[in-house]
Image (cartoon, rainbow over the protein chains, first blue to last red):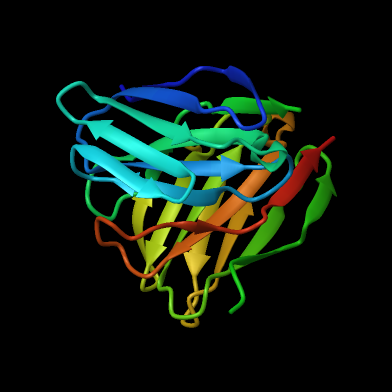
Length: 110
Length: 114
């Protein structure tokens, strides 16, 4: 079967750093993506890792370890607007659809 | 540039009815995928189309069907609606179906089945 595990909820304060972990068990692995979704909104693409290591995009960074079937999303300098659900998603083969985790709800307080 | 558009935004149907949801991909994108998102869960893959051909199908019953048109827009049809079909239906488009092609999501259609 296919499974992606991520924490259901994370809380933090403005200006802090938070890490959202994702472990996966899938038959085949091509890459790990991260999406952000505000209540009632569309999932928005944040980052993609196909190879081991860290990818940085502004305040957000994403890490992948293929040998550990593990990745994380790092959010720095948290802002209130970062309060949202964050999903990791695996692509098992090139060009195939995404398999999503259940999502992590991030609440940022002042 | 316009993003992925979906219509209608909201829809209320009763059990047993049929529904058609529509999606227009980003200009230049040739692949469309459909996902179902139940409240509190991540999106679940339903169908993927590329160049009007079905490229993948998720674990959904035959009541669900889809097609892609020559202009790359797509429709998702659901027959004999059940209460459990109530969900946010998301359409995602990508340039093609290569490994690194990012999927961009539309705002979704919120379907409520009474």
